[in-house]
Structures are given as structure tokens and as C-alpha cells.
Image (cartoon, rainbow, N blue to C red; front, top):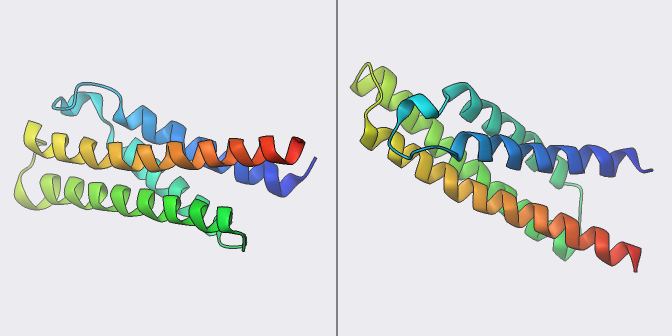
Length: 127
């Protein structure tokens, strides 16, 4: 068993799982979306991006691109969260949380593409 592949698979899957956990729930209900979970999804996504830098293949380039998309989406969502709670208002409004969850949904799509790529790579190796 290759420890590097285990760590890579762990972080790719964890990034998708944390993002899904934040994304689930009514889009306009701030009580269903935790800021700490968004922060954890962003941190794990950034770690995943760093892990993807070493791969020099075409598939590795697509992995990196999906990770960068997820990072950008989650970073924008986090900035909106901070803006909405610290600068504009003291409570999260349905309009703010809807925008944040929508950005997280884009990151979730990128994470799911990354998971599918990882699985397809595993299937190709086994043949």
C-alpha cells in the first residue's frame, strides 16, 4: 500500500465530505450551515491543492484545476461570510447564506469531479 496515495485519497474525500456537510440543508436557513464547517472545508481543500502540485501528468493537471476551482469558490464563500457577519450586519440574512451556500455548491461540484477522477485513475491502474 502506498502511503502517499492513501493520504491523497483521504484529503480528496475529506474535502468533498466537509463541503457536502456544509452544503446540505435549506439554502436560506443560516441555522443549518455552520461557519466552522465552511472554514474546515476551505482548509482541507487548500491542503488537497498542495498535495496535487507534485503530479506532472495530464490527469494531475486536471486534478489541480478542480482543486483550485474549489479553493476559489470556498474562499469567496468565506469572505462573504465574514463580510456579512462582521462588516455589514451582526446576523446572517437569508440572502447572504443563499449566496454562500451557492458558492459552496460550485466547490462541491469541483470536489466531486476530483473524486471521480481519482476513482477513474484507480480503475485504470488495476487493468
